[in-house]
Length: 296
Image (tube, rainbow, N blue to C red; front, side, top):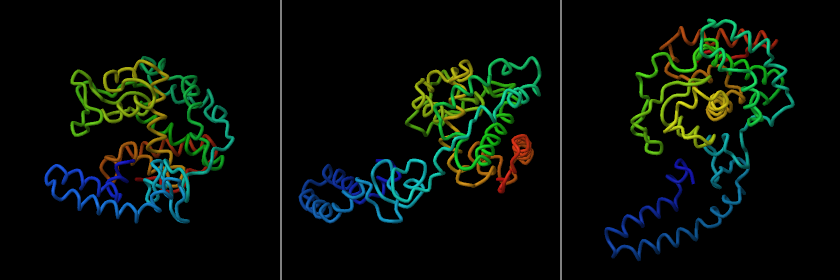
């Protein structure tokens, strides 16, 4: 059961109360347990139905088996009901859009001594997208081209035309969120930006590593030394945090918010203008309009 669901589910709250009072006042346990039992009888039909994803007509069944109407239920992890997911994958041939000419055209604008020129390759990118059938393949052909343009617009900005593998002056920054208890930092490591999307912070390295099969907490450097894993982290972050909103029609501005929201609302207009300019340029190269909501 997910945190956003279990914190508000009646049975979970009751069980929390039972556990707490069982340790503090044994005399109240019998009465409280009886209340939970009665509540369980009353809630049982709804709970059983939700676990079978037999939700109401306007509800969604989450991956944890409970019904609701918020994004936690109807978003990318929706398992049934009124899911507001993007359209199923289409038959767009991504290599036919991200051609050698397009990819190399980005690289060509970086300095010849850039470390990323020999690290980032189209072959590595094409190898990784096989594991993400929805990437660049949701909605219409135009929608697919816009998503690919958006992805490479951010990659271009983050890496300065595939020049940088690691964040400039990143080694002086730890990017350790000490509040995050799920992925505690290794004090000998730094979680600065690496890879096409410049993955940063311990919670992103930890979650990406868990999903992709590498030790992101103790070996974040692999994102800067293994080109396939590097692209995997970029696609992982995109599909987890960006794809769903973009494919739902929220526009390029939503992708800026997801990747680096601190640039938004006038806080870094130069960066936002650069990202938007790359996106518009790539949309033109792909022969599609850039769409609405370009700014965050």
